[in-house]
Image (tube, rainbow, N blue to C red; front, side):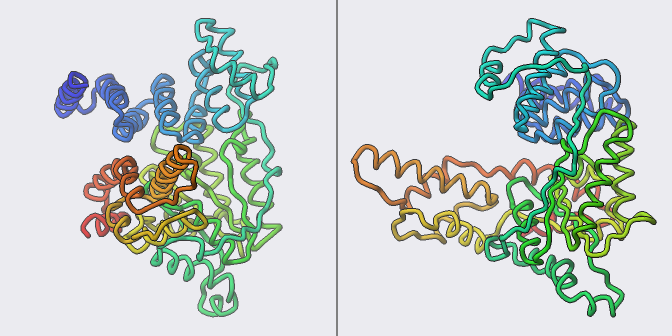
Length: 438
């Protein structure tokens, strides 16, 4: 590991003197990913793809997103590849499909990969497919995703803001921009304010962006539809755009509706950053659906969420599309106390010093706090198994669990700080600086 860090330091130093050396930049990305510094490696790969659309680099980027657990982004990334696909690409597509709970697609891709390169045989992967009860079928050797977006079920979430711990300022922003206009449309129209529109939520992973989107629909008593990128993408030219249009049409027929687009950068990424014509056309379609001349979006709200707002096309962030860009920060002390209460509710607990535990979890996300509670619960279960008596979760168990769970937001905050400091001419990321300066 020490040698790897030395190599990284040397390559990054060389890049300072030769920043346009794309092979060197690619080598730096590979070393950074190997060292577990995925965010930095991904940034280098994205910079390469701004200059040239190289299938090998695209595959590396898709693999990096896959390793990070960002399966939809990995799948969307593979869509950038045009022309002949390699066995390695098909194998990665198989793993992504399985992670996205599409075992038949995974089996087909796996068999296609083995037809081209039998050395890729993976017994564990095949056994996992067999456990899913699927068999491979003959398919065209192309990356295609043919699911009808009309299969999307409209929901009416029962979650409300009472189920969301903390984030009071964000909730108030959402009330003013979404909930009150939905509840008092005539009042807002008298001031020239419309119902509907778009709001983009961004922040570290695990801080509740998806959860708060569902809670927003619950507060509005509106229909809710979540856009699944792998149900929109299609190999055939023009079909992906048609799928996206039909989803918006479904939402319009059932207004008031909230459309939630998770990982917005996968469908609305910057058109200047090496996108394939296929992906660029899909971004254009999204722009047209949000405020095109033939788009009647009264009582339609589009809630977007992303961990990487700097990769979202700037045209999406202008008024009329995503009117507001809101930072979903890691929970503050008061919010962490509330989140711990929520996660420990109905669990056997001793009298817990919630404030003491929360003070030791600075910059933990909501997901991290859940992991802390789960780890403490495992401790209690182990002791119960040894003694034969149910053991409550204690403050000391939670504090020990905090030592074992590391905050997942730190890498994101480090990357975001660079953008907020050096790429913030419009003031988009001022909230990040305010948060970091507290």
